[in-house]
Image 1 (cartoon, rainbow, N blue to C red):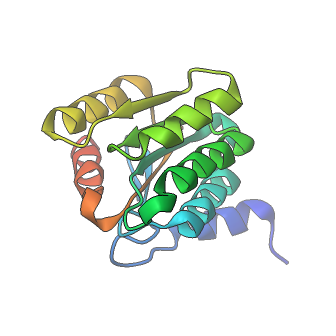
Image 2: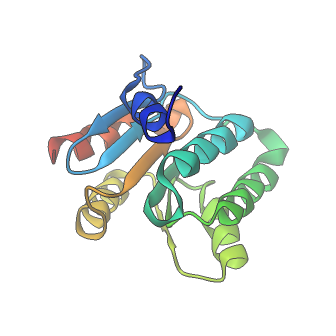
Image 3: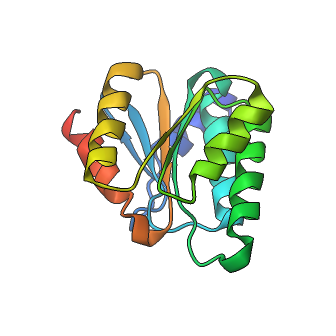
Length: 162
């Protein structure tokens, strides 16, 4: 018979390869799911984050979802609403298109627990600095975005601070 705590511990220690659900423990608990993103995988990733960490410790760093064509704004907006329904502790977005995620998250949550950074060198530095001064070892940080967003660079910077 399995207890919930043993099951949770097993899940936390299980690792995938190639930037898909890789967990790093250190200064932060980082879930590296940075390899790629689409609307369904983003929602699934957020649900997993919420189930493993709960609302008080769940932080998502989400980059743009690319190749959505004329539906891009719609899907980014829906993802922000979805994240708000989960009541994540904090939502951080990175990239031009993902600003819609932050906007709809704030509108639905009625709070300021979201911040947006531009996809450039300055934006990436500001994002890392924000994480360093805002979150701690109790927080679970999920990183996900389309491949072209190079979200793995954010993961690598966070790991340097371990």
